[in-house]
Amino acid sequence: MKQFQTVYRDRENFQRNLQDWNKSRNPDTQAVIRLYVNGAGEEEVEEACRCIRECMPDCPCVGNSASGVIVDGAVTDEKLVAVMTMFEKPTSFAQVHLIPVDPDADPEAFRRQLRGKDILWETVCAVELLMTISTIPFDDIVQILDQEIPERVPVFGGGAFRGNGGPYIFLGDSGKVRSGVLLLLLGGPELYGVTDVIQGWKPLGAELVATRSEGRILYELNGKPAFDTYHRYLRIPMDEHFFENALEFPLSMERHGATLFCSTVSCNPDGSLVMSTEIPVGTVMHTNYGDPQKILSQVHKCVREMNQFGPEVIAVYNCFGRKSFWGDLESASRETRLLAGKAPVYGYCTSGELVRMESPILLHNMTMVITGMREGGPIIREIREESEPAQEDSAMSLISRLVNYINAATAEILEANRALSIMASTDRLTGLLNRGEIQKRIRERMEQHPFESTHLIMLDLDDFKDINDVFGHQAGDAVLTGVSEVIREAGREQADCSCGRWGGEEFMILLCQCTDSEARDMAEKIRCGIESRAFPISRRVTASIGVTRAERGESADPLIGRVDRALYQAKTEGKNCIRSL
Image: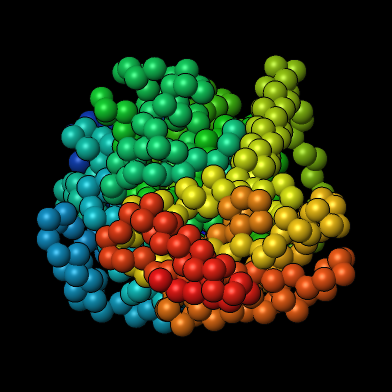
């Protein structure tokens, strides 16, 4: 494979470059041209497409709006760049399919259009995707692509960035498509590729849970307006610069075994955030910050692996937010220049990166998706040890240490709070729930599930005062601890069971989703377990037990009162027995 790149300045120079490229082509091989439009006017783009059609009418030309273009290994703000990838093997090919998508139509119409292309998937080695991500039903379209593209075929690509009037893609001079998908199929028996994803972001602070969301609108994190995460902790105001300021602190989540970073597109007046991807309720997330040292270390690792593979060209889909993170083009080019030392690099800055390796097609943000390709069979070289990037300046090193300190301190605080929470809800002697906690659970159960099956078991040790008077309070505590072990063991066999010490020698058990016979059997198991257990006193220990079932729609207080009466009945009718009401 060969690659040629040029910046469009004017028709004359561009045409001369195309003619030179054409002279290098083998008439028996194919080529494909990509046009990256980073603010160029429509007339310039149309003129470039006409030149390509005139000079190389058999060469497909694909293009999209971008937020920066990679030229000669560097991230640039050039307005219009053309890249030609030329195959050297007659069996290698590139096929292009542009499919417009009506965002209001049934997504299955996209499937029908894709199947109508009659693609011979057995000959395809990789699929390069261009999409207008924000203007299509993205999740539905990606699911269809996952189902239609064979699992063995890797997928990589990116979203077109918003241009004049919004993001767009195009095929030759057929006109802009502002809602659609472009598939560039690469194939042939001697074409090989390898794909990698570069991240480099580190979690900052405690985990967050999406407690309220709808599609890409994130309303609440940990029960509070999502904007509070940026305002309270990062001091980012809700103003016209919110997008740029929040861009450096993406949110992350786990999906299909991979860590995904999502950008905050905008902030609504009610404190909700518009995200770059859908956030289901219950998603566990983290705020992240960029660590230049970690980023460059990952790039160096990728460079070593690329060196082993021996690519002839390298495609780079670089998130526009990543370019913004570095602050200037020279710094942003540190990553891509490392790759350019291994092969010619082409690509652009995207509105989202697409990749499928060992998972479904995933939409990344703030990442760099890299694909190396070559013809003629893979070359497995020995991995050379290359020097890691130099340490960052003292200011950056200090920031990294401060972030590590904050994260470590946060983890310690969370662990301390967890321990305090356990202490606040646990009886110190028996390890069961204390009265306040078991009472709270009974009330919550009756309020939240008033028409579902609920049972209470209440037990009281018979003649426990005599045990304390005769054998001492230390022996009495040992009896209470042993009884709690019997109760805990019986509770393990129930799917939804809460066991607590009600006070003194009384215990309460809350059972959810069980039958009357199951509740009675558990009570009997506890009664027999206490009666047969050997305690460190020279007498038998027994318990009287009451069992009751909640009536439909009943509140907690009548239910607790009824089980207490059942227990009293067991006490007055001989002890060491079970009574139900």
